[in-house]
Image (tube, rainbow, N blue to C red; front, side, top):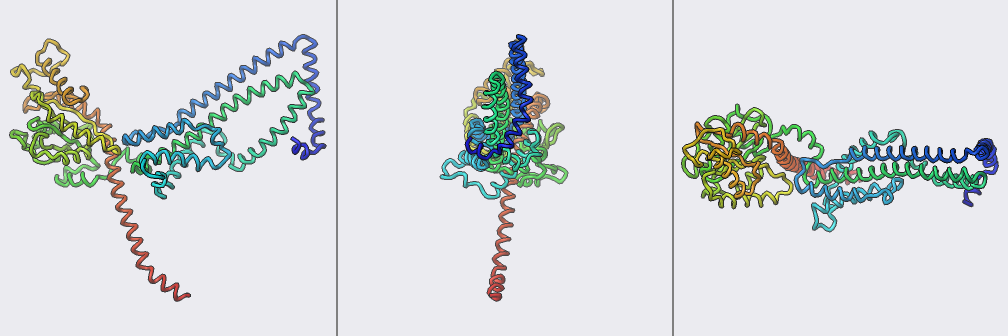
Length: 521
């Protein structure tokens, strides 16, 4: 205060007093008139009512702005693998604990400090054993995170914060410097006003407190949103990069995966050119026990004879691909496999095929209640899939075949209503579906009873196809991650080849450069 008075020009203060004296005089005389006429109380009540209404409107506006900011919160990528979704929960937890008073916006160090905390949170989840997991991020990836997060945050700030495209950083810094001086000068004015007009000063202080509380709420909410949006943006792209994704290609790749993976290219090369699929196909894997009807299921899905059905055990010796085309379904490769109880069944090969599959059809015969081998193979597959945290699990449908052999075996008059308590065949089919559900530990809505016998094909073209189309979106997400992994590996090899070529050229030209420098010296 003493420093402020020393820097204040007395002539300027006297000029301001002369300027404000008429207004203060009118206000004081008005208050005196209200008191003399007995209307001062009514004026006080009116001022309190209007102040309350104004505060209520400002509070409602701040609440509305908070809801608007909540609607533009960064959401996790639905195409992320399960591990990335768990990491995102940690990023959300960090964002929820971030408070404006801990990170003043006028202090530029918050950008590096808060960004570092977000990166540390993500990197610790992917490298929990590393002493400094933050250092596991490469320099190009760090720059890419900054680029992507800054781009998205710039867009959100420009579209949602008024005058953000007008105010410069210098303006904000100057306003911050002048804020303290202006508050000191205003405190001097407030002290003088108490001496001149105590009643007016009292009501002005009440009104000022309400204004500061309402405007401070809005400012605090905006500050909090900005900090949390920054954490979420940095965390989002850090998860993308740590999980091996290329964020610049995610949006386009989710709409169209045009590049065929090497494994699908090799499978498609076995067919004629007329069967070549223009884009990466879905990969559907058919599993089950011997003589369950896997090949017959493929025949039924095609609508025509494509491969010899299993008339003898172990007819299918290896995983065999077929091109599947049908209206409403993304073109697909469907793979027949040896029975899980066959001597030719290779668990490692099946697990590798399941890792490259986007949809799995498990065929289980309704007339074979001994499903211990099926459950053992299915549990082993589930354990293997649970270790693949960077890949989404392909959806699985269980096809219950041979329902025509259920009692009474002589009765076959489809269609069957499984809720019918009078139809013996329908009761048998419902019991078989429930038994398969319990024995294989699968949801009952993913179990479809069918008949695959030639001339008796039932429930394939309606219920089974409807279930496949229902799970097509989930299968496409699995395909996206599979293609991104393949693309990432191919790009890593391409980049390594370029780096080696550039290094070779540098080393090849190094003697000439050294010779020129020594000659110049």
